[in-house]
Length: 152
Figure (tube, rainbow, N blue to C red):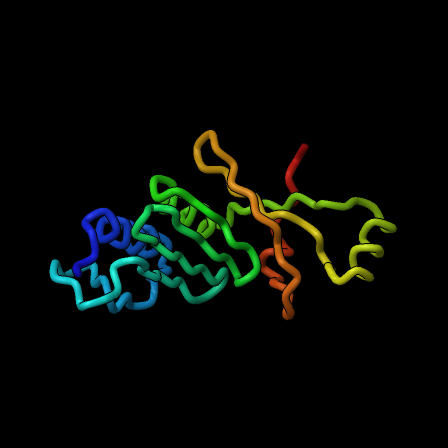
């Protein structure tokens, strides 16, 4: 079953967004943006990966409820209408961090409980803000941890 037109269009837009900042994604075997015929991929999910820093993986689902994984530690649920804009913001480095704890004691307690940097990643797309927890995986993403803090 071929990949639907909306997914094919989104893959092409992601390629264009990546190329605009010299970050073309890895080849997408199931959805070549220069060929009209698909190459027999499963129709329910298409993956577009941007290697490098930050590493970005976009999972386009057939139902339009897509996910964008940044540096393997921040997993955003994004509707199809905002996927390309969100990825563009990530590739431009416009990701902010919102700390969940403040102060020395709050950070010490968090570190002892297993989360060395308890924070959420936030991305503004138009008038919407997408936020997700930064998971404490090792090695911790230095790119995400170097993002500026949100201003309250």
